Amino acid sequence: MSPKLDEYDRKRDFERTAEPSGRTASSDSGRLYVIHKHAASRLHYDLRLEHDGVLMSWAVPKGPSLDTRERRLAVHVEDPPLDYGAFEGVIPEGEYGGGTVMVWDRGTWSPHGDVVEAMAAGKLVFDLEGDKLTGRFALIHTGARKGGRERNQWLLIKEKDDLVRPSAEYVVTEELPDSAATGRTMDEIASEEEPDVPFEKGT
Ligand code: MN
Image: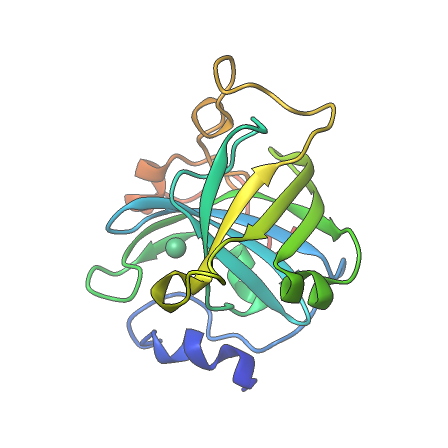
């Protein structure tokens, strides 16, 4: 097991949750992108970007926006294994992150420049090619100068391009609420209805 996944593994009891106890690996693209919609104690969206065999992840309470003026808090959290990108289902109550998990969007991503350098510098600019989100976004680290508990705080911001949509006229999380993988609603996933289409791993 890779030490990269230690924190992910430590938080979970794989006898109780159906989440994958995966190993590091690469997808066919090497650049898997997923946003999970996660109804834990609070609903949030988990942005996941494949890098170096795991999924770099940020929990975004309000989810992504296509409006460049919306600066969405994004808390950098532990990396799950690559297999996690295909997970859609229910984490049992009482377990870490207990609640319903949906594959809200998925596709591929492309960083602008070197990922390791961008992460160290606290500004990662990237393009998404997903079912719902496309175009250029940025993750900006804001927590460093504050120290302490806020050190994991970043902002997810839509960068200017042809795909910007002002929030006053279009809110992507409201317009497109259902699973990109199975078309299911959160309620349908919660009630463990079988998907209409076979669920394929990865993109
Ligand atoms: Mn989550």
